[in-house]
Each structure stands twice: as structure tokens, then as C-alpha cells.
Length: 95
Length: 84
Image (cartoon, rainbow over all chains, first blue to last red):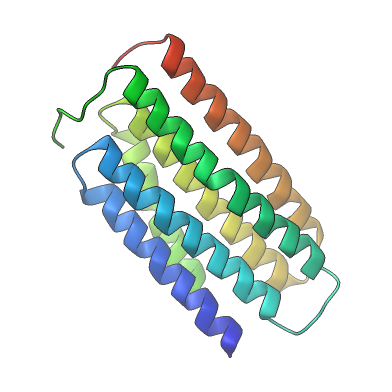
């Protein structure tokens, strides 16, 4: 039950992030929407899968996957933002 | 469970639309990052539902390779490459 609540909350966060990616009008706004909500949503789904079914054999692999996600997702977002800012993109287009 | 998978698939399609029609290359890199995150979540869900632990190893390799590709593409766009 708690596993389904956590995973459903993560799916809600992922849906909000997708809405932000589709509707915002700037690269940095889209980075804000995608980076934060993707990290939280995917981590909540993986935490819900860890809680699901008690302690099993694949829980260590899921914890490792959660650590990798929490480590690499902000680094990728920062790398994209730094790349856009270094190339002189200041958010002048709309669409 | 099925509702979560359907939600993730619909979100994956929306992000792929942004990847197809991003105005700038950073939009496409960002959409690739988000799409790989959703694919990893779907792989973890499928692994736990179907009781196949090998799919979790596939998910770990997938997230590592997609992180490497995103960082390399961002560094390439920072140094050189087409602006549009």
C-alpha cells in the first residue's frame, strides 16, 4: 500500500515535469522543470519499488540504482545549463 | 501499477515530442535526459513486476551510459558544434 502511494506520487511528479517541459518557453525554465521533478519523481518510484514486497534479493540493486540516479541527474542538468550559458544563449526565443 | 506505467509512457511520448521539435540543441539534450530517466523508471517497474532481476542490471548500465552521453554532448556543444 505504502509502495503504491510512493510510486503514484513519483508518477505525479513525472507528469508535472513533462507538463513543464512541454509548456515552458525557455531552455532554463525547461531545465528547472525537468531537473528537479525528474530527480524527485524517479527517486520516489524507485523508493516505492524498494518498499514493495519487504526485503528481497533485488533491493540492494535498487538502492544502488537510486544512488546512481541521485548522483548523476543533477550533474547532467548542471552540465546542460553550463553549456547553454557558455555558448551565450540567454533565452531569447519563444516556442 | 498499470496506471503508473501508462502515465510514464504518456510522459515519455510528450518528452519525445520535445526531442523531435526542440528549437535549440540544449532542448534536445534535455529531452534525451528526461526520456532516459523515464525509460529507467519503466525498466525498474518491469523488473519488480515480472520478478526478473536482470532488468535491474540493464537499468543501471542504461543510466550510466545515458549520463556519459549527455555530459559528452553538453561538453561538445560548449566547445564547438552548430548553434541551431
